[in-house]
Amino acid sequence: MNITYYGHSCFGVEVNGSHLLFDPFITPNKLAEGIDITGIKADYILVSHGHEDHIADAVAIAERTGAKVVCAFEILAWLNKKGIVNTHPMNIGGKWKFDFGNVKCVAAAHSSSLPDGTYGGNAMGFIIESKEGNFYFAGDTALTYDMKLIGNYRTIDFAFLPVGDNFTMGVDNAIIAAEFINCRKIIGMHYDTNEMIKIDKKDAVRKFENAGNELILFDIGETKKITA
Ligand code: NI
Ligand code: MN
Image (tube, rainbow, N blue to C red; front, side, top):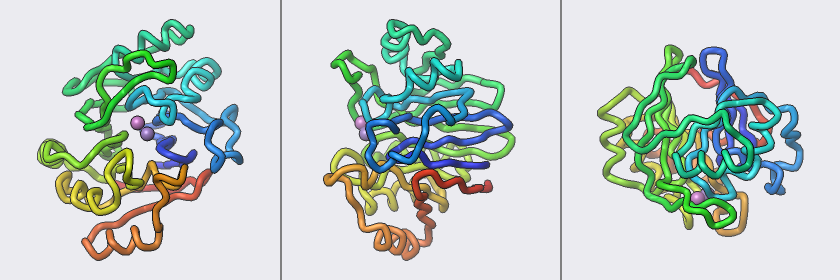
């Protein structure tokens, strides 16, 4: 699958010809100044929770592309009020078949409110199941023992995990999360965007290596082909 990083926790993933965009937060991100959001392809926008640093550009990109936004019901109501009506509501534990594959929503230990303070429902993670492989996008979350269920439920070929600490789990807990979900190929996210989530990237990669896992860190704007 071709994966492009747009900074913070925002990734574009091409699955079976569909462009999935996760947690669009680009224009307020100084590190992502080089990204032009009008050039980003999206057939689906998946929003893990309502915080500004995951939804900032969702309305603009959904308006331009007509992409279907997949998110918690409470976020859908907020988007509807902003004129975004091509939406699909989900909640933790639920699975739905889309044309590219299945999306299953899983628990994230985090909070969720929209930028204007509106209640955002529960923060979630997503498991994407497709003919090209399965992956887990954790969103913002702490390490939880429930992650073992994800590893038992499906073969996870690669996973997006937050590694920045302070607001989410950090590198050491993400290494344990990788064990729990039984996945060796981890793509790091939610780091370096501000002072509170700065990481030592070389050290993080080494720590994962020592644990027998691979931590993949993208440059912003970079596209890599990640295979199952
Ligand atoms: Ni958050
Ligand atoms: Mn966040």
